[in-house]
Figure 1 (spheres, rainbow, N blue to C red):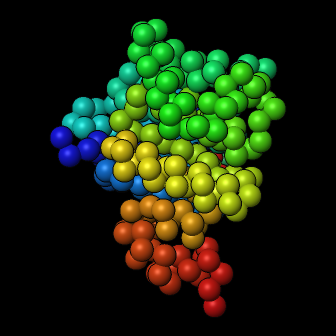
Figure 2 (cartoon, rainbow, N blue to C red; figure 1 turned 60 degrees about the vertical axis):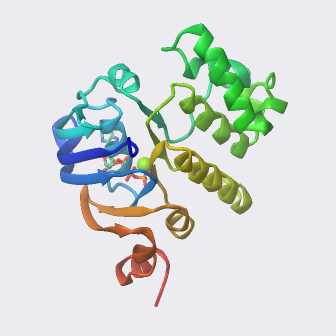
Length: 236
Ligand SMILES: Nc1ncnc2c1ncn2[C@@H]1O[C@H](COP(=O)(O)OP(=O)(O)OP(=O)(O)O)[C@@H](O)[C@H]1O
Ligand SMILES: [Mg+2]
Protein backbone atom coordinates (compact mmCIF):
# COMPACT_ATOMS: atom_id res chain seq x y z
CA UNK A 1 0.00 0.00 0.00
CA UNK A 2 1.38 3.35 -0.96
CA UNK A 3 -1.27 5.43 0.78
CA UNK A 4 -4.87 6.37 0.24
CA UNK A 5 -6.02 8.06 -2.94
CA UNK A 6 -9.29 9.66 -3.88
CA UNK A 7 -10.14 10.11 -7.54
CA UNK A 8 -13.02 12.43 -8.39
CA UNK A 9 -14.44 12.70 -11.90
CA UNK A 10 -17.22 14.89 -13.32
CA UNK A 11 -18.51 15.65 -9.86
CA UNK A 12 -21.61 17.83 -9.69
CA UNK A 13 -23.45 18.92 -6.55
CA UNK A 14 -25.67 21.72 -5.33
CA UNK A 15 -28.86 22.64 -3.57
CA UNK A 16 -32.48 22.32 -4.69
CA UNK A 17 -31.55 21.74 -8.30
CA UNK A 18 -29.10 24.65 -8.34
CA UNK A 19 -25.68 23.32 -9.31
CA UNK A 20 -22.84 24.84 -7.33
CA UNK A 21 -20.19 22.42 -8.58
CA UNK A 22 -20.04 21.18 -12.11
CA UNK A 23 -17.74 18.79 -13.98
CA UNK A 24 -15.12 18.76 -11.25
CA UNK A 25 -12.08 16.46 -11.46
CA UNK A 26 -9.77 16.06 -8.49
CA UNK A 27 -6.89 13.73 -7.69
CA UNK A 28 -6.21 13.52 -3.98
CA UNK A 29 -2.97 11.62 -3.43
CA UNK A 30 -1.08 10.80 -0.22
CA UNK A 31 0.07 13.91 1.62
CA UNK A 32 -1.80 17.19 1.91
CA UNK A 33 -3.98 18.57 -0.87
CA UNK A 34 -5.37 22.06 -0.33
CA UNK A 35 -8.44 23.56 -2.02
CA UNK A 36 -8.40 27.33 -2.35
CA UNK A 37 -10.93 29.75 -3.77
CA UNK A 38 -13.07 32.80 -3.03
CA UNK A 39 -16.17 32.81 -0.82
CA UNK A 40 -19.02 30.96 -2.47
CA UNK A 41 -16.77 29.04 -4.88
CA UNK A 42 -18.21 25.73 -3.70
CA UNK A 43 -15.40 24.49 -1.45
CA UNK A 44 -17.64 23.47 1.45
CA UNK A 45 -20.15 22.01 -0.99
CA UNK A 46 -17.35 19.87 -2.45
CA UNK A 47 -16.31 18.47 0.95
CA UNK A 48 -19.91 17.84 1.99
CA UNK A 49 -20.66 16.05 -1.26
CA UNK A 50 -17.58 13.84 -0.83
CA UNK A 51 -18.48 13.12 2.81
CA UNK A 52 -21.94 11.91 1.82
CA UNK A 53 -23.72 14.87 3.42
CA UNK A 54 -25.11 16.11 0.09
CA UNK A 55 -26.27 14.24 -2.99
CA UNK A 56 -23.93 14.38 -5.95
CA UNK A 57 -23.41 12.91 -9.37
CA UNK A 58 -20.15 11.81 -10.95
CA UNK A 59 -17.54 9.41 -9.59
CA UNK A 60 -15.67 9.49 -6.31
CA UNK A 61 -13.39 6.50 -5.94
CA UNK A 62 -11.48 5.84 -2.71
CA UNK A 63 -8.65 3.33 -3.17
CA UNK A 64 -10.41 1.67 -6.06
CA UNK A 65 -13.89 1.47 -4.55
CA UNK A 66 -16.70 3.85 -5.51
CA UNK A 67 -18.08 5.97 -2.66
CA UNK A 68 -21.85 6.17 -2.36
CA UNK A 69 -23.68 9.47 -2.81
CA UNK A 70 -25.54 10.97 0.16
CA UNK A 71 -24.69 8.26 2.66
CA UNK A 72 -22.52 9.83 5.36
CA UNK A 73 -22.40 6.74 7.59
CA UNK A 74 -21.23 4.57 4.72
CA UNK A 75 -18.55 7.14 3.91
CA UNK A 76 -17.28 7.07 7.52
CA UNK A 77 -17.20 3.28 7.44
CA UNK A 78 -15.20 3.45 4.22
CA UNK A 79 -12.56 5.60 5.86
CA UNK A 80 -13.61 9.21 5.29
CA UNK A 81 -13.78 11.81 8.04
CA UNK A 82 -14.78 15.47 7.78
CA UNK A 83 -13.95 18.26 10.20
CA UNK A 84 -16.73 20.66 9.28
CA UNK A 85 -16.51 24.44 9.15
CA UNK A 86 -17.13 25.86 12.62
CA UNK A 87 -16.00 22.67 14.39
CA UNK A 88 -19.48 21.66 15.64
CA UNK A 89 -18.41 20.32 19.02
CA UNK A 90 -20.86 19.58 21.79
CA UNK A 91 -20.07 22.57 24.03
CA UNK A 92 -21.74 21.17 27.16
CA UNK A 93 -19.80 17.91 26.96
CA UNK A 94 -16.24 17.30 28.05
CA UNK A 95 -13.28 16.90 25.74
CA UNK A 96 -13.27 13.14 26.41
CA UNK A 97 -16.98 12.83 25.67
CA UNK A 98 -16.58 14.75 22.42
CA UNK A 99 -13.74 12.46 21.37
CA UNK A 100 -15.69 9.33 22.28
CA UNK A 101 -18.52 10.49 20.02
CA UNK A 102 -16.08 10.51 17.13
CA UNK A 103 -15.67 6.78 17.68
CA UNK A 104 -19.40 6.00 17.72
CA UNK A 105 -19.08 3.43 14.95
CA UNK A 106 -16.26 1.41 16.49
CA UNK A 107 -16.26 -1.18 19.30
CA UNK A 108 -15.73 0.15 22.83
CA UNK A 109 -12.31 -1.42 23.21
CA UNK A 110 -10.96 0.09 20.02
CA UNK A 111 -12.53 3.39 21.05
CA UNK A 112 -10.55 3.32 24.31
CA UNK A 113 -7.33 2.59 22.39
CA UNK A 114 -7.94 5.44 19.97
CA UNK A 115 -8.74 7.79 22.84
CA UNK A 116 -5.42 6.96 24.49
CA UNK A 117 -3.69 7.53 21.16
CA UNK A 118 -5.47 10.88 20.72
CA UNK A 119 -4.22 12.02 24.11
CA UNK A 120 -0.68 10.97 23.17
CA UNK A 121 -0.92 12.90 19.92
CA UNK A 122 -2.57 15.94 21.51
CA UNK A 123 -1.05 16.37 24.99
CA UNK A 124 -2.87 19.68 25.38
CA UNK A 125 -6.18 17.83 25.19
CA UNK A 126 -5.07 15.28 27.76
CA UNK A 127 -4.48 18.08 30.24
CA UNK A 128 -8.01 19.27 29.58
CA UNK A 129 -9.81 15.95 29.26
CA UNK A 130 -12.58 16.86 31.70
CA UNK A 131 -13.01 20.47 30.60
CA UNK A 132 -16.26 21.36 28.82
CA UNK A 133 -15.50 21.75 25.12
CA UNK A 134 -17.39 25.04 24.94
CA UNK A 135 -14.99 26.63 27.41
CA UNK A 136 -11.84 25.79 25.41
CA UNK A 137 -10.06 28.43 23.32
CA UNK A 138 -10.75 28.52 19.60
CA UNK A 139 -7.50 26.76 18.78
CA UNK A 140 -8.05 24.10 21.41
CA UNK A 141 -11.56 23.50 20.09
CA UNK A 142 -10.19 23.03 16.60
CA UNK A 143 -7.75 20.45 18.00
CA UNK A 144 -10.66 18.62 19.63
CA UNK A 145 -12.48 18.63 16.30
CA UNK A 146 -9.45 17.18 14.48
CA UNK A 147 -8.80 14.59 17.21
CA UNK A 148 -12.47 13.64 17.17
CA UNK A 149 -12.38 13.08 13.41
CA UNK A 150 -9.32 10.85 13.84
CA UNK A 151 -11.22 8.65 16.33
CA UNK A 152 -12.97 6.92 13.42
CA UNK A 153 -9.55 5.85 12.09
CA UNK A 154 -9.93 7.58 8.71
CA UNK A 155 -7.79 6.92 5.66
CA UNK A 156 -8.84 10.28 4.23
CA UNK A 157 -9.25 13.27 6.53
CA UNK A 158 -11.07 16.32 5.13
CA UNK A 159 -10.86 19.68 6.88
CA UNK A 160 -12.98 22.73 6.10
CA UNK A 161 -11.07 25.91 7.00
CA UNK A 162 -9.39 24.55 10.13
CA UNK A 163 -7.52 27.82 10.75
CA UNK A 164 -10.61 30.03 10.62
CA UNK A 165 -10.56 32.62 13.40
CA UNK A 166 -7.28 31.45 14.92
CA UNK A 167 -4.35 33.67 15.87
CA UNK A 168 -1.28 33.36 13.60
CA UNK A 169 0.69 31.19 15.99
CA UNK A 170 -2.25 28.85 16.46
CA UNK A 171 -2.65 28.66 12.67
CA UNK A 172 0.97 27.52 12.42
CA UNK A 173 0.48 24.94 15.15
CA UNK A 174 -2.67 23.59 13.54
CA UNK A 175 -1.11 23.34 10.08
CA UNK A 176 1.87 21.55 11.63
CA UNK A 177 -0.56 19.04 13.16
CA UNK A 178 -2.21 18.56 9.77
CA UNK A 179 1.20 17.99 8.21
CA UNK A 180 2.08 15.43 10.88
CA UNK A 181 -1.20 13.56 10.35
CA UNK A 182 -0.42 13.30 6.63
CA UNK A 183 3.15 12.21 7.31
CA UNK A 184 1.76 9.45 9.53
CA UNK A 185 -0.14 8.09 6.54
CA UNK A 186 -3.59 9.68 6.61
CA UNK A 187 -4.28 11.40 3.30
CA UNK A 188 -5.52 14.97 3.86
CA UNK A 189 -7.84 17.14 1.77
CA UNK A 190 -8.13 20.62 3.27
CA UNK A 191 -10.01 23.79 2.38
CA UNK A 192 -8.18 26.94 3.45
CA UNK A 193 -8.46 30.72 3.10
CA UNK A 194 -5.04 31.17 4.63
CA UNK A 195 -3.51 30.78 1.18
CA UNK A 196 0.18 31.32 1.78
CA UNK A 197 0.45 29.22 4.94
CA UNK A 198 -1.78 26.48 3.53
CA UNK A 199 0.32 26.17 0.37
CA UNK A 200 3.48 26.10 2.45
CA UNK A 201 2.09 23.18 4.45
CA UNK A 202 0.58 21.32 1.47
CA UNK A 203 1.95 19.13 -1.30
CA UNK A 204 -0.58 20.04 -3.97
CA UNK A 205 -3.37 22.49 -4.49
CA UNK A 206 -6.51 23.22 -6.46
CA UNK A 207 -8.05 26.63 -7.00
CA UNK A 208 -11.83 26.64 -7.33
CA UNK A 209 -13.88 29.46 -8.80
CA UNK A 210 -17.64 29.24 -9.32
CA UNK A 211 -17.58 25.49 -8.85
CA UNK A 212 -14.82 24.80 -11.34
CA UNK A 213 -11.09 24.12 -11.09
CA UNK A 214 -9.23 27.11 -12.54
CA UNK A 215 -5.70 26.16 -11.46
CA UNK A 216 -3.98 23.16 -9.91
CA UNK A 217 -0.53 21.75 -9.33
CA UNK A 218 2.31 21.41 -6.90
CA UNK A 219 1.84 23.65 -3.88
CA UNK A 220 5.19 25.37 -4.39
CA UNK A 221 4.38 26.10 -8.02
CA UNK A 222 0.97 27.54 -7.13
CA UNK A 223 2.54 29.66 -4.41
CA UNK A 224 4.69 31.32 -7.04
CA UNK A 225 2.17 31.37 -9.88
CA UNK A 226 0.96 34.73 -11.14
CA UNK A 227 -2.69 33.69 -10.95
CA UNK A 228 -2.56 32.74 -7.27
CA UNK A 229 -0.30 35.62 -6.32
CA UNK A 230 -2.53 38.20 -7.97
CA UNK A 231 -5.82 36.78 -6.77
CA UNK A 232 -4.88 35.75 -3.24
CA UNK A 233 -1.52 37.01 -2.12
CA UNK A 234 -1.90 40.66 -3.02
CA UNK A 235 1.03 40.68 -5.43
CA UNK A 236 1.28 43.68 -7.76
N1 LIG B 1 -27.76 24.94 2.19
C1 LIG B 1 -27.67 25.70 1.09
N2 LIG B 1 -28.77 25.99 0.36
C2 LIG B 1 -28.69 26.73 -0.76
N3 LIG B 1 -27.54 27.24 -1.25
C3 LIG B 1 -26.42 27.00 -0.56
C4 LIG B 1 -26.42 26.22 0.64
N4 LIG B 1 -25.14 26.14 1.10
C5 LIG B 1 -24.38 26.84 0.23
N5 LIG B 1 -25.15 27.35 -0.78
C6 LIG B 1 -24.66 28.17 -1.91
O1 LIG B 1 -23.69 27.43 -2.62
C7 LIG B 1 -22.63 28.26 -3.07
C8 LIG B 1 -21.31 27.67 -2.60
O2 LIG B 1 -21.28 27.66 -1.19
P1 LIG B 1 -20.11 26.99 -0.38
O3 LIG B 1 -20.49 27.05 1.06
O4 LIG B 1 -19.80 25.67 -0.96
O5 LIG B 1 -18.90 27.98 -0.71
P2 LIG B 1 -17.43 28.06 -0.08
O6 LIG B 1 -16.49 28.02 -1.22
O7 LIG B 1 -17.29 27.06 0.98
O8 LIG B 1 -17.45 29.54 0.54
P3 LIG B 1 -16.76 30.11 1.88
O9 LIG B 1 -15.34 30.41 1.49
O10 LIG B 1 -17.51 31.38 2.14
O11 LIG B 1 -16.90 29.10 2.96
C9 LIG B 1 -22.92 29.64 -2.51
O12 LIG B 1 -23.49 30.41 -3.55
C10 LIG B 1 -23.92 29.38 -1.42
O13 LIG B 1 -24.80 30.47 -1.25
MG1 LIG C 1 -16.96 27.17 3.00
